[in-house]
Length: 291
Ligand SMILES: CC/C=C\C/C=C\CCC/C=C/CC(=O)SCCNC(=O)CCNC(=O)[C@H](O)C(C)(C)COP(=O)(O)OP(=O)(O)OC[C@H]1O[C@@H](n2cnc3c(N)ncnc32)[C@H](O)[C@@H]1OP(=O)(O)O
Image: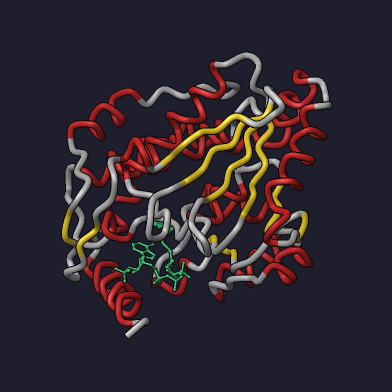
C-alpha cells in the first residue's frame, strides 16, 4: 500500500460489533448473505488486472462491515505483486453504491458509530491511496459516499444513473475530506454550487463538469474498463505511484493526522437532535418513495 494507515483498534472494534441482520429504526429489515459475499474479486485474462465487485443488495450501502470488506479486498489484491490495476464495479442492475448505510447514522449505536466512521475513513485511505491503478466502472447510481468510491478511483467511466454529493438534501454536509476530493476533481465554483444544492448529475452533466471521464454503453462497461486499465498499467508503476502521491498525498496525510478529531466531529455532529430529525425524515421519505 502506498499510503499505509494504521487503524487496528477501530477495525478490531468493528469486528466485535458486527451484525448482519437487523431492523432499522423505521422498521425495515435488512438481511443479506454474510459480509464475506458482499465483495468479490475476480481475475481477468490479463493477470495484472483484477475486478472488485460490490454485491450487497439492495443498494451496496456502506455499513461498517461493507467498508471493512472492500478495504480487505483492496489489501488482498495489493498483496499480489502481479496485480497492478483494479476495476471497481457493482453487480446490482441499477445501483453502483447508494452511499453510507443510513441505518448506521440514524439512531446510532453509540459504541459502534466511531468504529463505523473509522472504517469509512480507512476505506478512503485504502482506495484513494492504493498503489493500484483504479478504474471506476460506475454502472448505476452513485450518490454521496457512492460518489466518494468513484472519486477515489484514478479513472471513471459511467454507463447510467446519477452521481454527486447530495448530503445537503439530507440536512447534512459532506465531511471536509470528501468535499475536498470533490473540489479537487471539478473545481471550487462548480463544487460550491453542487454541494449547496445537493446536485446529482446524470452521465452527460457529470461528464460536462469533469466528475466522470467517459460515458460508455451499458453493454460495454467491462470491455472499456479493461482497456482503460491496460492503458494505466502500461505506465511504469513507480511513475503511477509517484503521480498519485503528488496529487493525493497531501489530502491523505491531512486526514491521517486528524483522524481522531474527524471521528469525534462526525460523532458529535450525527448525535445532534436536529441531525437525527433530518435523517429520520429523509429515511422515511426514502422508504415511502416506492409506495
Ligand atoms: C460541517 C459538517 C462536517 C462534517 C459532518 C460529518 C459527517 C456527516 C457526513 C455524512 C456523510 C454522508 C454520506 C452519505 O453517503 S449519506 C447517504 C446518502 N445516500 C443517499 O441519499 C441515497 C439514498 N438512496 C436513493 O436515493 C435511492 O435508493 C437510489 C437513487 C440510490 C436508488 O433508487 P432505487 O429506486 O433504485 O432503489 P430504492 O428502492 O430507493 O432503494 C433500494 C433499497 O435500499 C434502501 N436504501 C437506499 N439507499 C440507502 C441508504 N443510503 N441507506 C440505507 N438504505 C438505503 C432503500 O430504502 C430501499 O429499501 P427497501 O425499500 O427495499 O427496504
